[in-house]
Image (cartoon, rainbow, N blue to C red; front, side, top):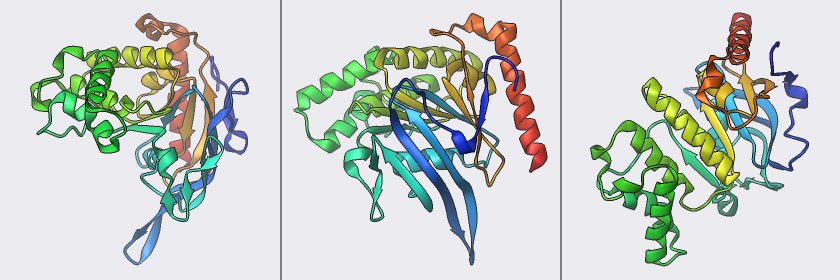
Length: 282
C-alpha cells in the first residue's frame, strides 16, 4: 500500500507500542449453526487494540466485521479463540463477565430508542437498570451526556420528534451514560445524509479527543475510515478474516479540509484498490 498508511499481515497485528493493550483478540472466530450444518461468519483472527486508540473495521458486506464487534461487546460468544479485556477473559464458562461487560458501550446502526420514553429517560435507562446512583444523580448524568453530544436542549422530547442525526446522538449519549472505557459502534451513521454524517464524524472525533476513550467503529465508508481512524483493520470477503492493519498518520484534530487534500484522496484510493484486490481473490 502506498501513501501515508502502512499495512501489516494478520500474523503480527498489534496495538500501539506507546500504550498498553486494552482489548486482545487471539484466534477469534465465529461459526453459526444453519440447518443441518454450519456456516463460518469469521475465520480465526487476532488483533490487539491499545487503550485510547480509535480503530475502524473496514470491509465488504458479510466479511464478519460486525460479528467481531458483537463478540467484543459480549453479545456473541466466540466459537474459537479468546477475547481479553484489560488482561482478563471476557467469557468464562460460556458466560460473559458482567464486570467486564460494564466497561463496554455499544451503539447500533439503528438508534434503538424506546419510543415511549423521553430522550432523557432513554439516556438514563442504563443507570436506572444498574441502580447504583441516586435518581437525581442519574438525571444529572443523563443531561451531562446529552450536552456532551450536542443534544442538551432535546431532553424532554420523544424519539419520534427528533431527526435521525439527533437520535444517533442520543444513542451515543446512552452508551456513554455509565462511563464505559470502550465505545463500540456498528455503522452508526450509515443511514444519514452526507452533511449530517460529516458533522457527526467531527463531533465523534471531538468526543474521542476529549474523553480519551477507546473507540472501535464498523463502517463501509473508506473516507470515514481514513478521517477517523488511528488504524484501519481491513477484512477479507466473507467468510472473512482480518487481512491487514493500516496505520493512518494524519495529525489531529482533522478538519473537513483534509478530505480534499491529495494525500487523503490518495489513501482512500489505495484502500479502494486493496479492497477490490481482496474481493477479486475471493
